Length: 352
Image 1 (cartoon, rainbow, N blue to C red):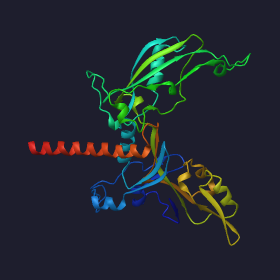
Image 2 (tube, one colour):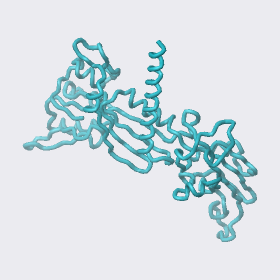
Image 3 (cartoon, rainbow, N blue to C red):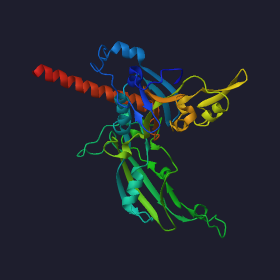
Image 4 (cartoon, rainbow, N blue to C red):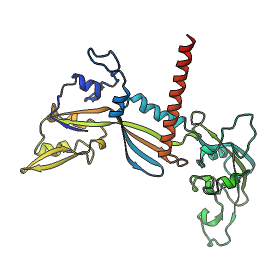
């Protein structure tokens, strides 16, 4: 957000309601105050029609594993609800049981099982059921992998070779060595998208000639709130849109010094009628370091704020589910929670 010649008072009502104020030594106006009866003469009750007019969702970039979008017109509690749901309440498939028949590698059984547990699995969780503690594994609730590897010397290695990856065969055991073993009708159900680890190059353990591993791995559907291995995201985070307010104009060499107070790309120096002038061009790149507030020459010439209801949201998927699909699932989870609360309230009111 870019603005110039605005009211520089930190106490005006609009600023207190809509902005988080960044000062030299503190951050103020951090709590939301838009709720009924908080300000005399103003009706701040939530209105669905007004929400439809003000709410915006703008997707900035999407890849196989990352998505960044702007969510505008919601309270921090809603943005934080999405963040928490993405981390803990969107289901995925992950390793739940490791059956080690043989392991003579340098990595002990417990650590090896833990390493396997954190390997992300490429499988559509919507096509599997949750497995109860007392339930028997079936093709509807369990995925089976086999991991079998034996290290031996490479007969084609050059004499005097010291690189273990060239000197030995299977010196490293990778996640790609986990082979899917279809159960029941899984081969038919997943023939278009065979189940496998998301990444093939995760080192699971190391072997030397004569050492081997023979393991069966079972994967089940679960939630990140039960264990981090089921979390579908590496991280889900948001930050408020920075806003840089300039009072008047900053010109000449002061404009160059002003530009250097911000990360590259936030402020540009342009020439107007032969005079250098500082112009804010992309405040979303600002890290809000407050460096500019340390300089006396810019006192009362600039104010830093953050827009309270404008969230720059970033989702980094571990790769099992694409980020745009994760967000849709998070929205559905939040809707289900809202419906649960609504039904509970109706039941309570009817019982009274």
